[in-house]
Length: 112
Image 1 (cartoon, rainbow, N blue to C red):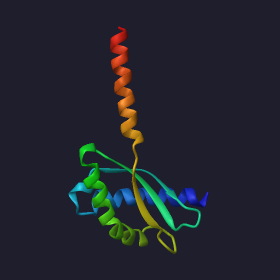
Image 2 (image 1 turned 30 degrees about the horizontal axis):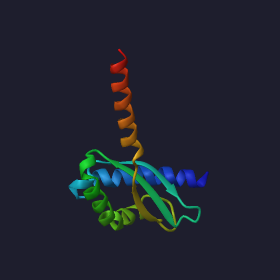
Image 3 (image 1 turned 120 degrees about the horizontal axis):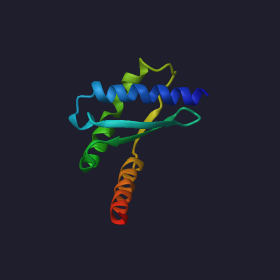
Image 4 (image 1 turned 135 degrees about the vertical axis):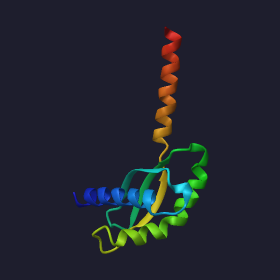
């Protein structure tokens, strides 16, 4: 239960920091999908997606550069003794879902 609360808090605060406080324009259109914190609270996997899939690599690099800033901002916002190391991971499931949806739409049109 505690891990779930921490994941929720981290997701909310990281989303806010990325949207409003990070100056890099490549990060403005990042959506935090989920956060999974390890049991020892040493690592938090932050699953993200980007609005423009073509800029995925640039955005992931920008997130890596902003990691230290994001962690420093979390110290004041999340009640934890130690802020976990953040690992940003691109979540392919949203893009995959859109592709499946498009395929289903074309199949439905062909059936009509």
